[in-house]
Image 1 (tube, one colour):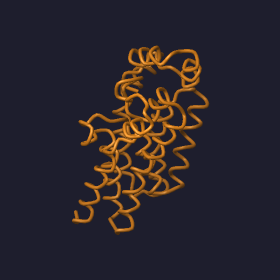
Image 2: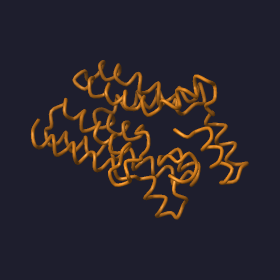
Image 3: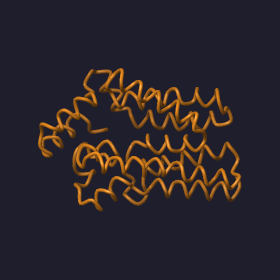
Image 4: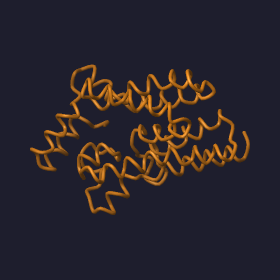
Length: 218
């Protein structure tokens, strides 16, 4: 491994460790996502406790945390195999942020941003898979799970040199969704439409209590 590749892996991890959800909520004077809702510092929980604008900002920043390091590594001529590890490092930073006591989100948006840097055709397929799954099932988590399962096959078809690192990235995403998988299996996972409907009817305190009981791992 070259010094450039190693440096980009470290840089990607540090970029991923910048928690967009926490910083944006502080700037907007919103509740700390680690202490409200599901307790997860991610776009979904920010949507729950802070609204669409803040959630959209978090989502964009989380995607860029994966895209920027991989793009930069590509222009620095980092070999394709190590580009995959740069992507993995960005997601690990998001999941285990060194700046926030190693408690982060699930890494889906950052993983998507990393794959977008590898190829827009791949990111388009994965985004389409997520959207179709959500529209058919109503489960956002199921969309992420199905997208993670199919991502290695998409990559193998279009850019096989990235298959192994993307497969590792998919495994990481699936491990982070183990709680959602269990709730889906038991029929206890709530649909995204129901979340939005309930948000209109319930107070922030009630939403936080329900989220902690039913979506601790969201």
